[in-house]
Amino acid sequence: MRWVRSFASILAALTLTGAASAATADPAASPPTGPVDAQNVSWLAHVDTPTGVAGLAFIAYPGHRDHDVLFADGPFGLRAWSLANPADPRLIGELPAAALALPGDDVSKGFWEGEHLQVDQDRKLVFLSRDPRAFGGTKQTGTSAIQIVDVRDPRRPTLITTHIEPGGHTTECIARCQYLWTGGPSHTGVGNQPPEWHGQPAWVTDVRDPAHPTTFPNPVDLNRNDGVTDYVHATDVDAAGIAWTSGTGGVRGYWTSGWRYDPVARRIRLASPADPVPYAGGKIISPNNANYIFDHNSWHPWRSIGGFAPGELLFVTDEDFGATCADAGRLLVVSLDGSYQGQAWRSTPENPFRLTVIGQWGPAGNPGEQPNTECSAHFFAPMPGVGDGNILVQTYYGQGTRFIDFSDPRHPVQVGYFVPKGSTAATPAFHDGLVYAAQYSHGIDVLRFTPPRSASATDHPK
Image (cartoon, rainbow, N blue to C red; front, side, top):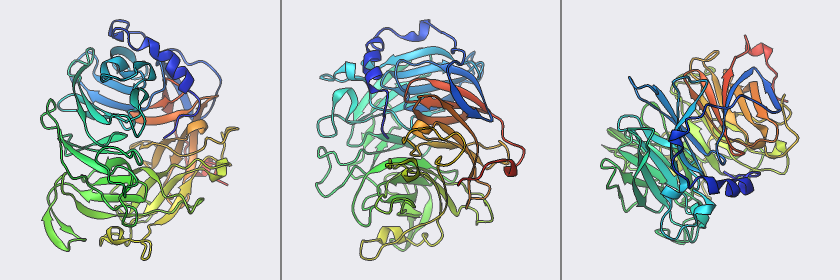
């Protein structure tokens, strides 16, 4: 992740976030204004925020007046909006950045950063990942932590605890949020990180008692980069409960519960969040930069797509900032075929194992391409039930929010886009038929995507 345009405005705006909660203000979302380049998208509303937005998540409150609540975090802290009208979010609660600061922090520098925001639907908790660069720290001097927020009353978010642990760039719920896997950032040079590590792996924290979390002494997903322990950027859990770690050295999946066959140990054993069983995955070589091996996040659908076997395909963000748009990271579609016998866990530079990229998509040469080089792929979200069911929405920094049809996974095609002029896209979220597009340049846009009647009506990438 990197923010490219908005950091100066972030620092200026943070003077506002230390004030009392915005819950009493309850303003409506702003009407859409400003120049925008779009196709097959209706712009319903713009939700303003003091700074850029890094993460989005939703919690349902059945029977309550707010129904569903949208949560977002960023340098401003944490905010909550009622979705009583999903097309018109209304601010109802806030935990400002000042409430998340530790002694010695520079509050004016803001919280960092809260990508991949996680929530516990059952216990009504929000989990914030505090990167060591929060509040003016660095990867060498800052403090990494998990910050757990009670949102049983979303109008009054309350910090339960700040749990200091080695990882901090992103966190992910495991076993229905009874545990967390927290990873990153890249090499910190501090804390529980041996000098031979190139980045933080995934640290496992027991949050069954949210007031007293416990981090296990041994992290998971070690030796991920051809035998070297490296940076785990994000973890994503699929419908079967397999946890997929993405970062430097590829994407690897782990069972975290049940009796499973371990292809590395070559025996059946009990998987747990702290002692997971390898499943599949491996290192991925970027099609347009053979020296770049960083994967940002992933999605593993279990159904058959485009004639491939059920569960064979893995969708991956290749985050790479090239010199030109054509050189930038893309959405990759990868086959897991041949990776189920522990090959990735035995891979070395001398005897490497690599996954096969079978499809890719990027904005270069496609309708709506903007005159900038901030073209790298970033977070994405599948959109079940939309169009043919094979559409996802993905952000591409200066190229905005893109809608991609992967019915033919070898040749994904764009079927829509949304780019406010001069904006920097952060992450999308799909909820209740609408897309909420967070912007690093500040704010959240509420979108309705209308798919074209058929893929034949779309433009294929050049």
